Each structure stands twice: as structure tokens, then as C-alpha cells.
Length: 108
Image (cartoon, rainbow, N blue to C red):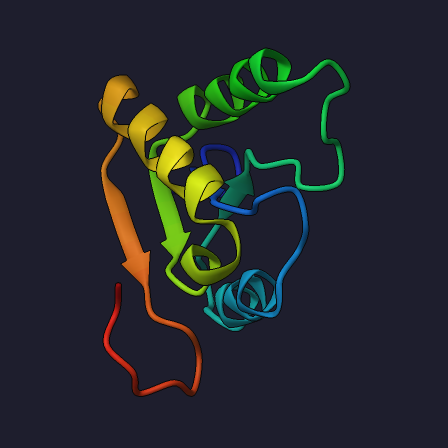
């Protein structure tokens, strides 16, 4: 990992930057000499329905080396989060589940 060869990550987003999504990147920016590239584009939801969404997410996930899944998304967007996890599995990408910041409840 270097500035020329950053780790490529996809953070599950459900097409919006949740508080957990933003806090994760705040955390990463505080780590010295940790270089990453975010392959997710939460602000670019494709038009065209479910097939277009699936294609866009597949492209973002396949460009990544790892998928980070904030579990707080499950309560709001369970279907979309499960789709992102299924696409990660199909692409052979490891998945890291991220507990919501400051919450002590069990992960679904």
C-alpha cells in the first residue's frame, strides 16, 4: 500500500452517505500513511430501475479489494445492503461488517 498503489475499498452506502459512512472515512483519514481509494459512488444512483442499480453496484464492488458494510444500514435498507453483500460474495471480495458508531446493540 502506497500513495501510488492505495487499497481499493467499497463501503456499502444504499445511495446516500449515512452518518456511519461519513464517520468511517473520518476515521480512515486520521490514520497516518494509510492510502485508500473509495470505489463507491453513493451520490450517483443510476436511473433505470433495479437492473441499472445492480449493474452499477457490481461495477463499484468489482473495482474494490474489500467491502465494508456498516450494519446500521440493515434497519433502513436491508434489501439493498443484502444485495451489496451478495455482489461482494459473487465477486470473491472479503466483507468487513462495521458496527454502528456508539451503539451497543447486537449486529443483525
